[in-house]
Length: 222
Image 1 (cartoon, one colour):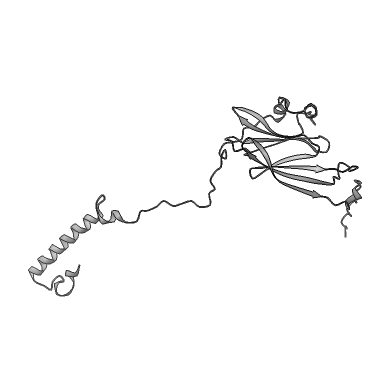
Image 2 (cartoon, rainbow, N blue to C red):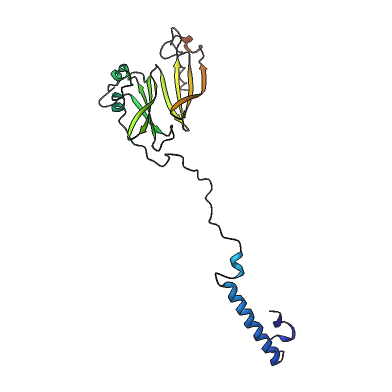
């Protein structure tokens, strides 16, 4: 492009100069054409263009994409020989076809299918009387955790099993336990192992521990 400046610009120079300019333009065209073709040119050595990266998308864990297989919790418990006769005898409908069981699905044992947590409750006051965890293995569910105690309940919290059990001292009414134990379990190899234990002691000021709680004062209508 330098040949197009000064006295060699079009209309201001000799034919010889014009020929030189045309030769330069032809050479420049060949050079530009060589750079624009793929396979050999200097542009092939440039920086590669990377695909845009999605940020903030968590990596799915084991079994995270597998939908939960709905089970019949009552049937599962009644067919389990490790469940006590006392629990099985309490598995009766509170009303027509409504059983006192809570069922949760989630990944606790690192398998390819969600695990099943079943809490058995009483019909009258919904107090937990048993907690059971089942893991799918070879197309059948196996019992991998059992807690048959009064006032026990289990939940799934970020891949861990959290079991809460009310603690009763002598003379405590059912509605006023002395405290609770909150135990967190993690799956290790073939069983659940305790990781954390928290004891919460309740205040005895409410109802003086006799179950006769003070009734709240109704709001004023004024």
